[in-house]
Image (cartoon, rainbow, N blue to C red):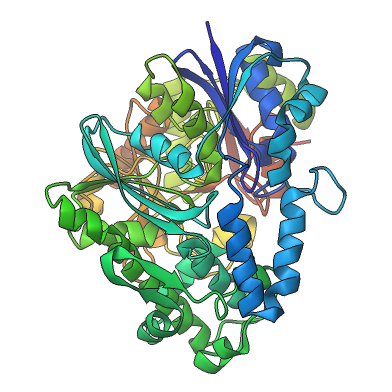
Amino acid sequence: MRYTLGLATMDNSAAALFCDGDLIAAIEEERLSRIKNDGSFPHLAIAEVLQIAGITLADLDRIAVYWQPWRVKTRALGSLRKITASPAARAAVTSRIRDMFAPSGQEEKPDGSWGDLFRLRRILTSEHGPTKAKLHFVDHHRSHQLYAETMRDWSDCVSLSYDGGGEAHSTVLTVLKGNNRDVLTRHRWPNSLGHFYSTFTGFLGFRMLEGEYKMMGLAPYGEPVWRETILKEILHLDDDGRYRLDTVLCDYHAALKGVFHPRLSELFSPPRAPDETPTKAHVDLAASVQAAHEAALKHVLQPAQDAYPELKRLALSGGCALNVTANGRLLEDGIFDEIIIPPAPHDAGCAIGAALSVLPAAVNREAVRSPYLGRDFSQDEISAALSTHCHRIPDAMDEAKLIDRTATMLSEGRLVAWFQGRAEFGPRALGARSFLADPRRDEIRDALNDKIKKRELFRPFAPSTTEEAAADFFAIAQTSPYMNIVAKVRDDRVPAITHVDGTARVHTVSATAHRRYHALITRFGEITGVPVLLNTSFNIQEPIVYSPEQALATFAASGVDALVMGDHIVMRDDLK
């Protein structure tokens, strides 16, 4: 047996472990550290995947990292141009450069750094013991693309990776034809659709690199009145699918410090304070940014359509692939017939992609496609957690009774916390760590926000449905196993998961992917006639829960009626 460890060490850091071609485990650092979007060096995730496999660092043959740190020229020149063009950006850029190369672990710099990759072996061995594993440094966008492309057995497709930026590029468009890879376009950093979207996330008062989905949720409430202004002044669409970002007006690094060019206020409105109720101008700006982003995405893909019009399948990756509205628009407009986005299209997924790039053995694709890659907690571990938090351990139930009772509670309007099997890898709750509710009850959204989420009312909740029933409720002609595509809602019986624009972020569930969750949705459908559940992540202003202890603590802190964990149903009065 030969072991390969894949690492993402900055931003959304993570670790993934393969045994030969089988993916054993993949975990984001935040699930263990309990720090949302944790970008520190993933020591906890590394220790966890090694423990799941029952090995140590000394047993590894290869370690693959999602970044080639010596490729600094483009970043250095881009930063220099920004400083020259905008003296106001000097402090922000130099601060960022200092952070990128500062040793991780410093009190003022909790995130991982680019500089860590130059001392990778020393960092690993000082924490996890000796290793003779060969180190591999993999191109960032290649890591993204390989992971996404493994989701389907497509010999021919278009593959796009786009995010804030890799070593030198922010966007890479590739075509796969048989065994050939043809890179059609590369867009050099700092031209970046990720930085464009994040800058306006900050301008609209949301936390950058975290609140982008909030701006996306706000957008349907407005009108894209400034779409053309943005495309004229800030995000220029050039020939041959190229784009240029005016980094003076749209200064990502300054925005991270809360500084915005005054021209933005002249063009649109003053920036929104984080605690300010969004004005009509703020809402319209969110709609305009989203519309401009969608126009740019279609523009970037145009060279593939021109050169290979027969290719109607798209593998999408990178942090920008989490823009589920843009993904759905590509399908709705008929640009592609089928799109696949992996469970973790953001940087965490590169831990898997980097490992895929160096595996010598054939890959078990089904294992890579599963999002359920965390620890599988045993009945003894669940019982131990229950004994700590409950007056007594609730009786274990056979599966049929457990499913029937849970579905009945949901149909009666109760809120249920659901903890089953291995934790998900990626930012979506996919039926392993979820809060569940009845989507037929419009008022249940207010109950969820009051008792659990404490979040903005404009943010929609998502549905889970069985693959068999998806087309009856949603205008989607493909599966959406990782909740990464928006589609129109066809049935008016599910108002709690229908956004203001009549769409929903669809999660289709197969019996193969998660048998117990599929059985629950099916049973709920038998009781109600609606095989759809409202599904939101099992957390309260924190990373999604990972362990039984965390599940019980979050359940106790919520107003949820019941926790279904393993074979047990815990009611509130069972808690100590």
